[in-house]
Image (cartoon, rainbow, N blue to C red):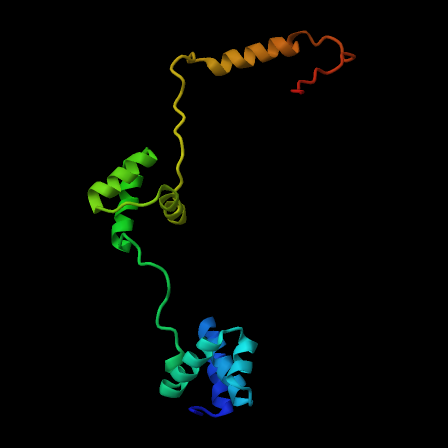
Length: 177
């Protein structure tokens, strides 16, 4: 059934492309191939779909035109936490740092009664701009003047105190295997 003229169909394809509706563009190209005289099988082969899909798309076009071809399902499982809950979680994590991964999982389960796979939760947190990090506190055994001691020892090791002549070869430090 010809719901649109060829010019209107071409305009519908351009509109779908500008709206970044790639799935609709593909379906409209299938219809355009039918308009140009292809059989359903040939038109389907050109856009890379199966025979059963050509039947569904042709029926959707005949019943409702462009709107019949518009995809209705965005795909994917809905998130376990609502966007508001996830924002609240991120606020809690930023406020009371540091958190271990196990503590984050326990918090989510206690507060929202939801569980996530550890790899998926880390992906979600990275996408929100958060990263797991290990805090590195100062070693309590190190002396308060550790930087001065290091500088003094380096000076001694490099022999910088007794640079009387300029003919001395410079000392090069390195690590070799």
